[in-house]
Amino acid sequence: MITGDNAQCGGYIARACAMVDEGAPNHNPNPIPNPDLSWTKVLLTLTLTLTLTLTLTCVTRHVNKILKQKQTINEFNQLQDKYVFVPTDKASNNILVVCKQFYIQTMMDELKVFDDDTTSNTYEKVREFSKVEVVDDEISIGRKMTPELKIEDHKKDCKKWNIHVDDTQAYLPFMYWVPKMHKKPSKQRFIAASARCSTKQLSAAITKCLKVIDRHHECAAKKRYACCGINSYWIIGNSSKVHKMIADSNARKNVENIATYDFSTLYTNIPHDKLKERMAKVISDAHEGDGRKYISVYTSGASFVNNPKSTTKAYTKEQLIDMVNYLIDNCYVTCGDSLFRQKIGIPMGTDCAPFLANLFLFSYEKEWMMRMKQTDPHLARRFSNSVRYIDDLLTINSDGLMKKHMNEIYPEEQK
Image 1: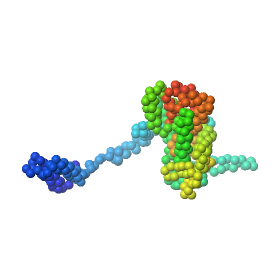
Image 2: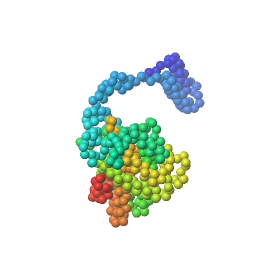
Image 3: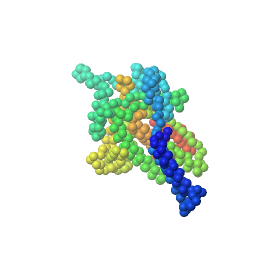
Image 4: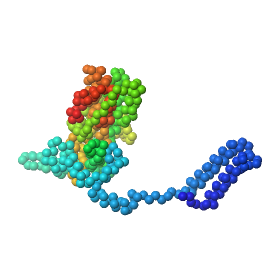
């Protein structure tokens, strides 16, 4: 819609048209020199004038945003009494409507809220009291364990790593799940909402450090591959490396077979003792390989250093291992007014979870590849075109060898 002073608009247009008449070679009995150039300038002037006129006088139509209307909001509020609106796994722009009773029941089944035997459960409900001791035939009951007290513990404990937990993060993660509609039958992905929680800053610092550890192992593996043609680093962060591998193989015209594999329950099936042991080795190997004592953590990243600045957070390998172990032991989630601790695996949703999972599996992959380098280098080279994105594996031209040797490579919990 065009508004404003019509006379002014008409004046702009009339003036531009007059310039066209004066500059056009077919209308002016005494055309000006170099008419083609002048005609071009006139057309440009007309175009710019009209554009300026429309820009100055156009107003945006009022858009009636239906989702902002009070009636629409009221209708959605009524629907939420019986249904849950959640994004779809691997298709977050698609919203699914789930029966609220089914949603809650599924959550309770995952947490095993009403199970008497909890020895094999992924989660354990935190006891009402944190500690019970018998001293001189007298029962000593410790403090009552609540989410608030656990948050205070996190605040106090994180100070030794120079990590401050402010009031905006004084929460514990809550559990929710999203439907996995690409599975037949459909399944659920359980996530700990950790965007704002008492271990957020600790997890973020660990993430930056583990990126440095990861890069070191990647660089070391590239040097090893250049020397002996054996690739012991299969981790990828996106699909670009897969595309390049396939393109290079196609260019050589030697793609014979491609196979994919996955770990169905990676995150919730890693024993804490093995995770701690493997992470300690991965971190120690990187520190020893680099030779520098500290990892300094900055706003946008981290790096190995020998002499960190006094104003910068910096951690030795012992401190980083301690931080990782503490986070593993403090995987708490809430569901309603109940508090649960994840005693097996790592929660999806915490910042460093992908790095913990990646480096955990990497430690086994590297160990097996280095063993094969010594005992069967030909077999090791058959795995050089292998890549893994967290829990998804892809191999090119391995002729099914991954399936044959998978049990030798990975721990029994991932078979």
